Each structure stands twice: as C-alpha cells, then as structure tokens.
Length: 139
Image 1 (cartoon, rainbow, N blue to C red):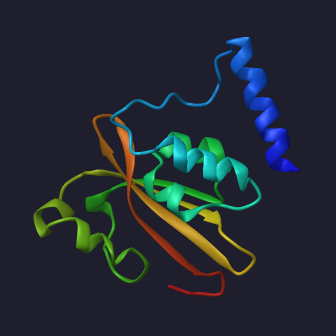
Image 2: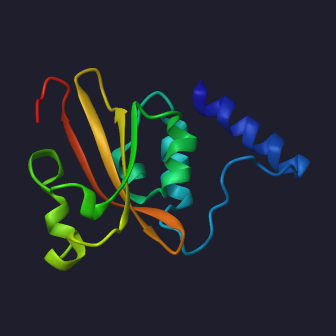
C-alpha cells in the first residue's frame, strides 16, 4: 500500500513541476537515486547502504534527527575503542591535524545503534565509515 501511495505522490509532484525541499544532490555527491528510492520505500527503517553513500545533510534529512550528532577535529580525540576504526582511514600525521569530523548516531533497530563518521571534503561532509553496535555495548 505504501508503494502505491508513494508512486501516486511521485506522479502528482512530477506533473506539478514543484521543486522538492530536500537537499539538492549534485553529480559529484555520493548518493544515487536508486539508494534514495530504496530508502524512501522502506521509510520505517534506517538503511545502512543509504547511510554509507549519503552526505551528511541528505542523511539527516531522510532519517530525521539523530540521537547524537558530534562535531570535532580529528586531533581532539584519541582513536581507541569506539573510535578505533579512525586509524584505518587516516595516517598518523593526519590524526594530529585539525580535520573536521562529524560523528552521527541513529537508532538502527530495537537492539542496535548505527554511527556514521563524515569527513569534510570541499565543504561537504561525506561518509567514510559506519559502525553498527548493540545498545548495551559500553566503550
């Protein structure tokens, strides 16, 4: 039923020539129409595949507000435990630099959270890693 309603809305919007208030998606951005369509059809859950490709603004737009949204410079945190994977993406020299990072967490399922790390590239925060973990986990 949701799919039928979705298709009717798409046809109506397309015939009206109304611009969407969603963040615009330029060709160089990581998100694809296929990923957005898959996510919108399954609006009752957060899609990891979508989050791995969606820039920060688009991810927040389609997933509503996250439960945690942190911004920091890479040199302000120590990459151990929860942030240990940062060492896979940055050299030792980069870890000492003030590279802007966003760390955003959403409820992923009844028992899990998903955290996405974004790096600022050309004034756009692009995802570079995701982590799904149990809500009972302690770091």
